[in-house]
Image (cartoon, rainbow, N blue to C red; front, side, top):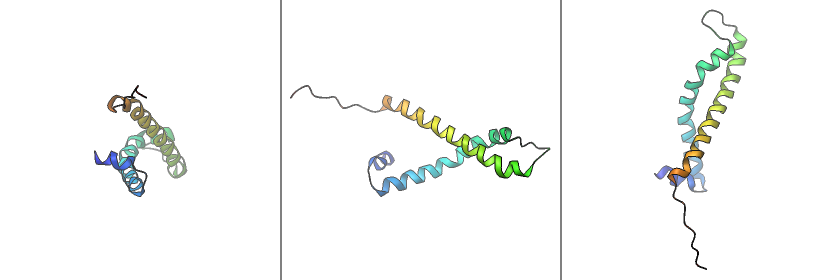
Length: 93
């Protein structure tokens, strides 16, 4: 994949691709954490306290997004060696 090739480079194009990928992943991560964040913040359909929606919910949701991102990165790092060929070292000197 060309995306992986670009990300391996150490120039500005890799930063641009990484930022675009992060923006693409932002929406699904946000959707996955919204319901749990509302539950943990105590926001229900009946009683809504404004400070919970304005203060507690964003903090809880950000915390959950960081945890989810960490879990995704750990899974990718754990699975990556299965798909990457390792260069064999030559025994000749």
